Length: 232
Image (cartoon, rainbow, N blue to C red; front, side):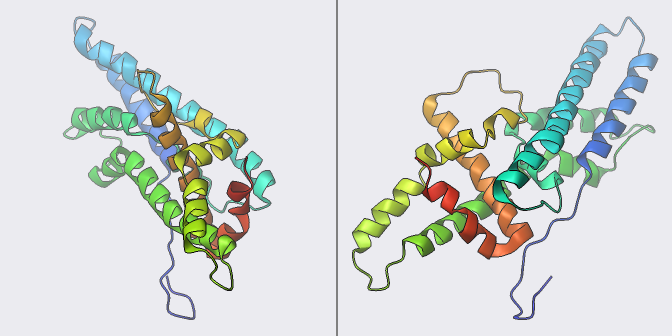
């Protein structure tokens, strides 16, 4: 899509994650009912699949019902597509379940999703990274716009202040204020280090600003990056 100045803008085509998860859950339940009790290995996998799908479904519901309204109140905006915030919360550890399900059903007559649908589900965490990549770029630009001094006083001072604002440590503080970290969708077994947690929090915050840019354009990022600048 292009605006009147012929500048390409970013857009999002919904992939209906919750609908696809419902189809997967029903397919796995059917497989469970058709699997002989003697096939304990497959039944154990099925139990794990059902548990993991249910966990993701519950997380998506919490994001839709709790996180989205809270962020809308905080920012004074409406998200056009709440699925974007759901996508932003997917972590790499979710990829494995969709790879396993794709392997299980790719040649099945009861395949609940086509190959393209499965590919999108497998790549949800990669989509989240792309949102963060967009957010990283626009945050840096918007912060610089706020720090800009008409007489170009001290480049070193501006550079240092910008680096402090966009650091993972600083962004993690706003991530906590907005309570983004608790909405992550993941199956990570280990306790990450402090630096890893801060990196993840920074990435989540970047993804939110990426969504602001996609749905409300750059002026919205410039307006709302003040939350990050003023965070202490």
